Length: 297
Image (tube, rainbow, N blue to C red; front, side):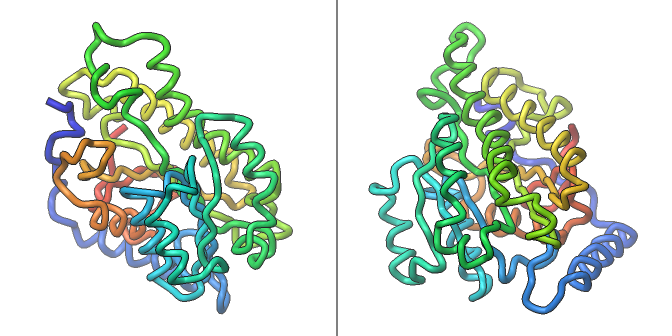
């Protein structure tokens, strides 16, 4: 069994009126704070320049297509290790044009790759057209392990496997965020008064409270570590108007899950975008799944 990533997500009780009213207030506040034609974190993702890592397939590809479809003013920088083989991304780019979709090379397991990518990002067309800044960053790239689920059991775990998964799932999102800050792509309040949003795609299997089936040592630990990284960033970057949110996609049928799951990537991405738009409540430092349920730590 694939621990709780392979189990149905528990539903919370029916939405209470008070919670529904809170959601409405949050959404109204985010919308009201936006000046005409500008993106505000927590508001509708419109007129936004968005970075998506792990964008060549699965949930990442759905993020790209749905963001572009949401509003004609949206543009995306899609990141993957091998853009030359990203056929589906290139098909999308042919439809919308390079001014709305740039495809860039990024290996989130390689610190040098992250640094080089971030240092050159301001010259990428969608970012250059947005004043050299990015409005939304979706740290989506991830892995279950070097060979899928083959090292899911305690007796199969080793240091190399742990470090491989941590590099991609934990260190990658941290360094992507760090380098974007260092290069003034996010977090520069003089260039970006409204601020930016970072959505870190984690997993419910990183919840200590939800772990009722064990196994998955590297994957569980890497996602639990990402959760605490996001929490610290939500505190440290608040004065730079950077909002940080955790996103649980559900058990999605993708190549990473070897085609197993309960939902498809389009449903997951649609729900996570709603979370980023504050449709489920306050977002900074919070953790939502694609249905709008808050996940226990």
